[in-house]
Image 1 (cartoon, rainbow, N blue to C red):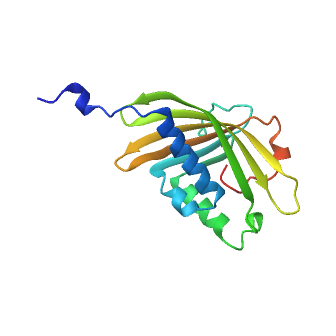
Image 2: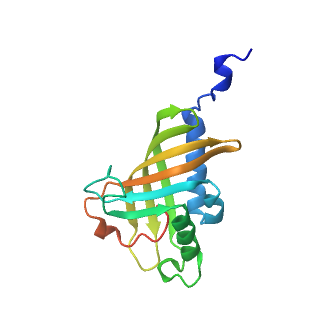
Length: 169
């Protein structure tokens, strides 16, 4: 007879989630976007809401970015193309992640939040600083964690001062 606890996944620790987020940040900062795509579920969403409605739904509210899995793949293809003037030469980014919290953990999904600062260095432009909070819905898979939703909540009051955001925040 199987015990009830045998059928439930073992809860993940904050350290395990932090390691996953740090690895993701390294892939993004290194422009290893094909590898980063492997971290996404087939139904993944990448969302950057506007400042006036950060908790809104992209189905009913204007978002800066509201990509489903296919649009994410297309975004990666575009920014990796040498003819993509918005990212040629590629921006240099450096992300700092802190205050990682597991907000909810049920069955095979976790809701995770983390504060971030992303510095963007681009030739002939001033350094841009993107500050905010990541909100993830992570799904446990056989080989580790996958990203089902990646929501980027920017703290800037005025997004225009941040310039174009052609890279993955």
